[in-house]
Length: 69
Image 1 (cartoon, helix red, strand yellow):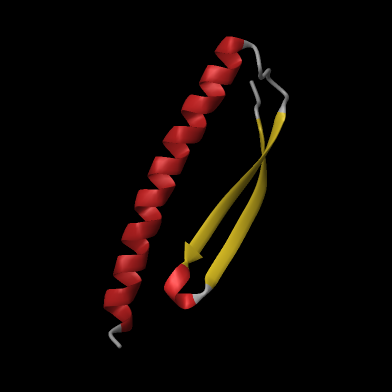
Image 2: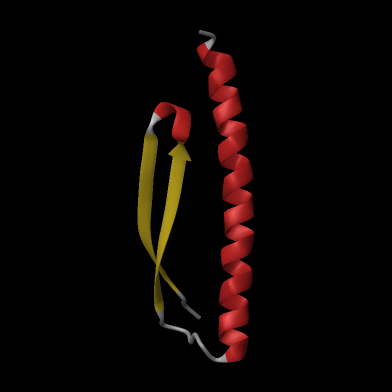
């Protein structure tokens, strides 16, 4: 196994998912603030799930995001 090549592929995947996720969260928070369903000081529990079925891998990463001014 070429670990360097695998590492590069994993990093590309993580970069793509990270950018996509960040944009989606930022847009949803802006929408929530505009619609009044969120306000500054609110906290949001975010969960990111990673699944690779063929490997039987299921991982959840949970973090609290605080909306600050």
